[in-house]
Image 1 (cartoon, rainbow, N blue to C red):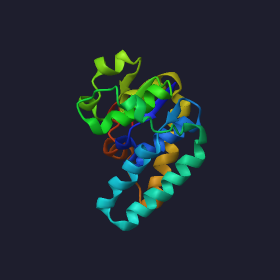
Image 2: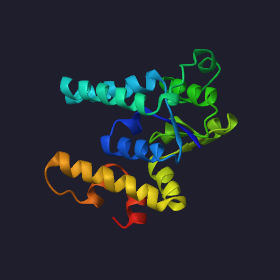
Image 3: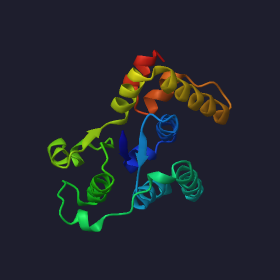
Image 4: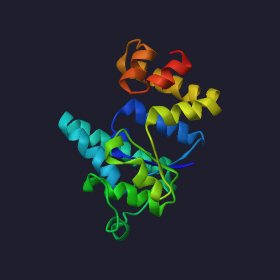
Length: 180
């Protein structure tokens, strides 16, 4: 499955790490454009210059981990599209150009299913996508989640409840499935 990752699912670190870990396990192919990555790194600016620099470094690591995931911006495709928010046209254009199966986003209202369906693309929220992947590959998804959890605890230098971590990452369905 090929999935375009919208900037809003890359911004939360835990969610991004779970998605990239599951992708590295071969459960889906992540796709993005430079513009999507710039939106993610710019979103961190509100946390300060250090946070933005860290996000830019993490974006470099993300690019290196998935070198085939980069899709060029598609202004010609964008011109023929309509979405409620013109600022999201580039995401749909990338999905069309890459023959993606879906766009992974929290922004349901900005990506109406009927518009995406005309292009043969589905909209998936990250929790639903990860739950589906867990349903088919529970050991692989759980291993990624456990590794991300361990990293979060190490960085926090204290125990963190997995259920709370998953809740903050907006993954309640996956957490329940894993009985976190």
